[in-house]
Length: 178
Image: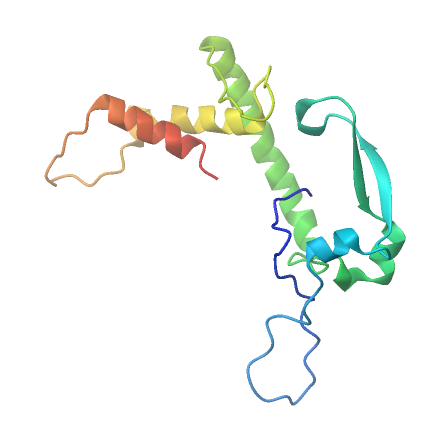
């Protein structure tokens, strides 16, 4: 996973396991880790070069990552969360449902793109010749939210008219919201 993180970000180990019979609130964080800027300049930090294809829509790109042996021997020192909230059985239960939803969105978006060609939302960092899954999800959301049968407002309330351009702008913004 690649993410933005400031070089002076405060990173912590996971909290130590709580001993039985301990009184008080459990710890939320563990020991403080070194800043990323310190890790970059530390001579003991071992890096490994990895070639990644298709990185951000470009060709091959070389990345430097911390070596896998350092990851095994010092799991808490890498600024990577080593615990995961899901168990293997939970992943096994949810993966088919997520794959099914992904497939439905992809098929529906494909049909919508074929019947009403639209442009994908542009990105600032690389050109997008084809729509991404985010674009497909936004297209399906827009299709659902603009249908007349999607009206969920209760009857009998005071009607407030909003210009169609404003409604379209709000739907467009909501379609791409995470």
